[in-house]
Length: 283
Ligand code: AMP
Image (cartoon, rainbow, N blue to C red; front, side, top):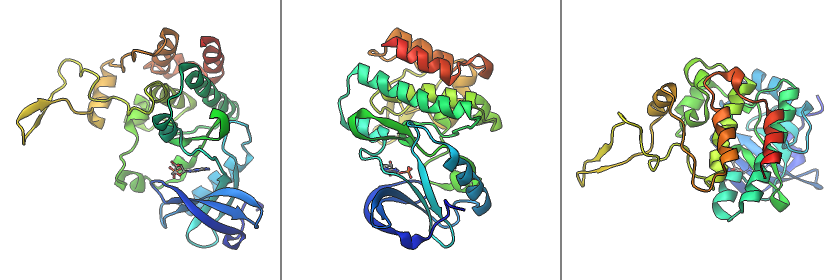
């Protein structure tokens, strides 16, 4: 078990971020290699399924995937040790930096390239979203946290403050938990809206709610305000054929790609291989 190593090999440095299931630190491995160390809160993972997943993840190697180096699971807290990405999550990065459209399209193509590799290896990400893409130097991005969602205990996912990511989920996942590479393609379409919207949360209040969707009443001021779609509303509206509208600076070619990602029939959605060449062609 080469990937199973001892906690003592790592010296933890500054905290890089906080996830749903624990903290992420910059770390030094054996006094030489800079790494990212994700610490997991006790009880968030089924130990056996986590180790099985980690074994698979370790085998996946691609320039557009964040490399898993090692895990520490002999005692609590569990560590997941990966390559360090100096600019953190794509979600924060695109919110803070004013990137031009060709850079954004390039980022989208890089993600499609990492996902095409997972597709070839019959591996499903299950939680593809801007928060799970990490940024290195020169707008170089990599897909992170692939497969981890599978190892997380379901009741933990439901009980965390952040709800199950319904807004990124294909309808067959939201309704029947049917994950596939094509449900990843749906999530990729949502991720494209995050990229073009510079980190905008999907299905915002500013998308005029379709007919029949209620305005909520702000009790204190007694004025009608538009609220974000709730998870239930997203599922209902998607089932009735609603899709997020095109953002003003979203090229037509990119919006066509999004709509294909959101085809109700998973089989009709493009493969990541196709998405990659379409994105490379689009700019
Ligand atoms: P997560 O638990 O994966 O959601 O991570 C929480 C935060 O930690 C992310 O939003 C990033 O800012 C940071 N982070 C996670 N993994 C890494 C990494 N490999 N390199 C740099 N920062 C990371």
